[in-house]
Length: 176
Image 1 (cartoon, rainbow, N blue to C red):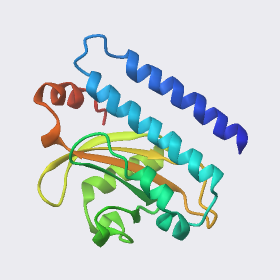
Image 2: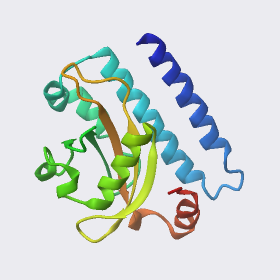
Image 3: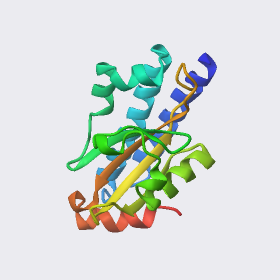
């Protein structure tokens, strides 16, 4: 497990370097920074889960974990945790906690399924229940909780808070 953790640290550093070096024009700079912060957050959450191997119930009520999870980088954004079965486990909207995403939003379900199938970070645009467009990055977390749950980190933001000149390059960069 320690080797996996060290490989993850190296991978995050490589991805971060690629994200920051990918744009020399400065147009994508703000979103490279957001993606860098998301990858950094995934690393921090993985580190916390590795050093505090706990059950899902314990993680869901762990104030330090929730504080770490709830740090956001943009206006109108939030983070959530779901499991391999696409059940929402931690979310600011308590009414969807414990629900399978298939009963909430099919577009989000498709993004989650891609992340689960590929076991890597996936990003996409989708329309939420409130009929507004959002941008989401979903990343797998390493290992499992002490009671066997494989978890995924999802960072979501409303596109209304993204300036138009960033939206074009962001939409062009999202691969299906």
